[in-house]
Length: 231
Image 1 (cartoon, one colour):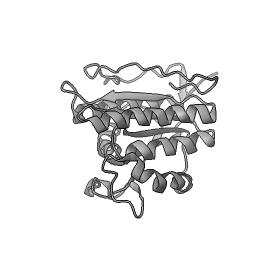
Image 2: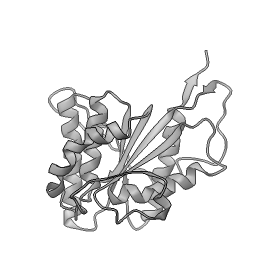
Image 3: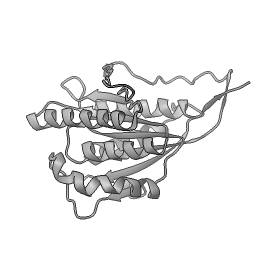
Image 4: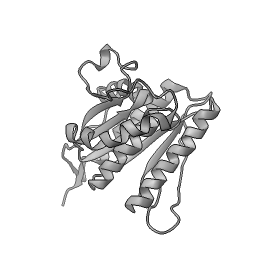
């Protein structure tokens, strides 16, 4: 969590063990809660975000999904259609015009992405809870996601970021540091806390495993954003 109040924002990070499921298969007790379905908007940014869409769909459609979840609406945002498949035919999609992929070069696409964030939220308005998912080390998603978070926070919307990292190359590590700096900059500028859940691709948790872990987290947030305590 980046804290934007004061002169020195801090960042707290808890690593998520890929071997420990976040969501069990049992139904949650509902004795003390009245569950009201809200809307949770999930903004999936860049290739990494787009690739997680199917994991979220699979898990939300599972009979083991918790009852009382918010209605999950996915928005796929990218600079190229290369990551889109037939499975995304019915999804809400925003593609930037005049940009064909980031190629891991964040600075090249930022001028074309940043001014469009407000337009994206006008086209795909925020929900009761909003989750912004991207790679931290890529070229497109790592730029798009902080811009979407900026607009959500400026509109005083409830928003959480999810960032996926890996250390396959020097530029990905450098991009990750720069993206974290972007989120810290939001906290400083807007004087708000930016909450970021980090996940890491490594030998023990590959892309598919991490995608399911992120989907797991989305399910939990969908439950939390639709529960109101019964008087």
